[in-house]
Image (cartoon, rainbow, N blue to C red; front, side, top):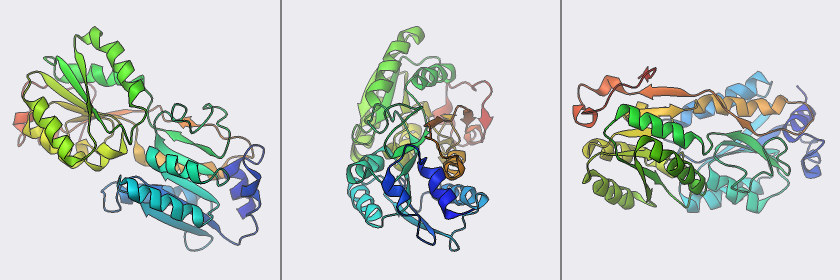
Length: 323
């Protein structure tokens, strides 16, 4: 595969900025990658492997004709700003970006370097693209979920914990600006299941601890965490406190149950990183934002014998993948 094919596929020459085309004389391709999680996160390795495997399938091999520059923000706002600036200053041919805060920071720094986002909720509402079919500008990518999913998560919470009367939605408003749409959808669906939503914003670990302690004092309360990079980074703490206070919980990704959480319903995050690499091989046309539709229900029922306290009065969900 020629390098010109790479740039053509990534930017869609018919619609993406001309500045991207001016870089085609370099002997190798350079891609900047900003991850919203930490480098030591258990999800880090599989995501890198998926992205690089997808690129190899297209003929782009790290160390041969491809240079990859990784930055790991671990959900930290200062690191996010600093690494976004570093990546832009490297003048890569393309930036792959995971997390809403990182994409927001990059968007403020460049309108010419093409960007492919991964696992971003509500890219239209966040102002990243004009619409999904024709995103415009220099940004396109892969969504994780949209607001209507909140109704499905609520349905699953009531299924596994029928006595639930209140559901706390946990999120960081600074890293999940899309939370208002999810709350609106949740509130609209709640009367059908005879429950009430509790908006529970948290911005640091002490706030998580305080919120979970308060929720644990009330009977018949369950929790749901929004697909927010902040709660992903703090998932070990959230899972621990959910067990401690016996709070039934549902999460948006499979890596929560693999970390000890009760139940998740969502897309395969690793596959999406591999798919992001595939955008390098698209024809020279505008690239639509893609939305992974296949979702999996995962339950950590193998932990039941040693963590019975959290599972009291919790029923086995139908069609769940046990892990």
